[in-house]
Length: 422
Ligand code: LLP
Image 1 (cartoon, rainbow, N blue to C red):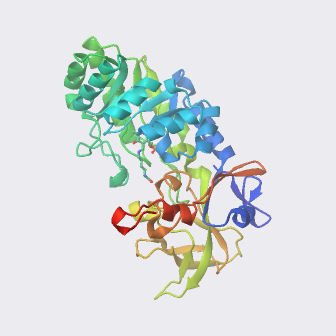
Image 2: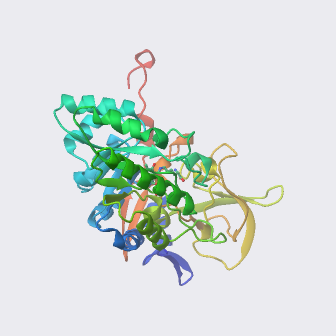
Image 3: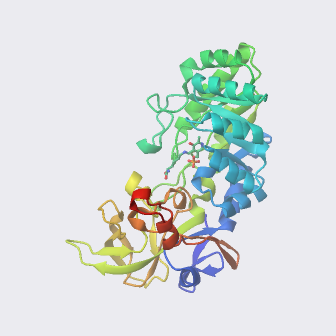
């Protein structure tokens, strides 16, 4: 559920007409609903109510805007981070250091040292080689690093290949069959405190069974590790629960069903559970608001050319992702069209042969479910400045990231001395 609804024929975000935002800020612009974000946190937390006091570590990569992180900090969430940049963003937004989990397959020694000095809940290590590096870094600065190994359970997650992470051929984690040996080797390293096991098998999962299969394997591993004398106090079950994009498809499993499954499978684990939801918290809390530049006849369907492009919202080009496209002031008629941006490649296509609200030049449209992996993945390709971001709360709204200035974009480059100094 979200808070983007038609009121008096105009699409609103909470109590603010999107037409007001388009007029004041221009388009394209991302618009986030604070009430939707808070609601998703509460729904997820309620779904986990039977699990003691789990740490919900929001996957910052999904949407790292400071206003989003500060909203989540107010809700008491922690952070799952994958770079020292995300660490500093989370801290700056008020997320407690002790609630930060550091994931990722390529942490550098410098990133490790900074996170260790600043404090964190745990490093999710992805190899023995990484454990060796962290041990050396921690010894150097005389600190003890709390660690878990992320295991690769070799399950087929059923999601798009580019966002699947738990199959044996993926780069992530220690193969679960070799986990016992990895823990034994890490145990012999100084300045590491082994406290947990972590798993994350992919994103936009629409079936609970691969998750259940992975969690069962983790449960078995925890028992084995304890049998070998290790004190396992934390289990990180990752993120990955899908959200609805296309209303014509069956709904993904609800947080309630996910919570029931986790409660059943983790009974008796006696650990503090950690969750890393990203998309579930912010996905449906954002839209990309865009204006139709013109409608051009096509060989069959017309091309609706909007002022947003693949550089602003990469998901369709990258994963063939489907985003609902709706008129902000529907005329009550439908059309079949290809929706494209102005970027000079055919991959800059948001929808092909899509049945949608009829629109004409000058009309506003939204791309829905654009709160996660959208603004954060934008680029300045075709010298298009980064899209601004707005957050709405009730009848208030604020610009939480101004539109990038074209001059700033140009001045970001430097000329080499042989071409003159700028
Ligand atoms: N934990 C780890 C270690 C992750 O790698 C991810 C996402 C998450 C948690 C959060 O997963 P979520 O709950 O959001 O599914 N750009 C892609 C998605 C990439 C996901 C990467 N990792 C997309 O637009 O679909």
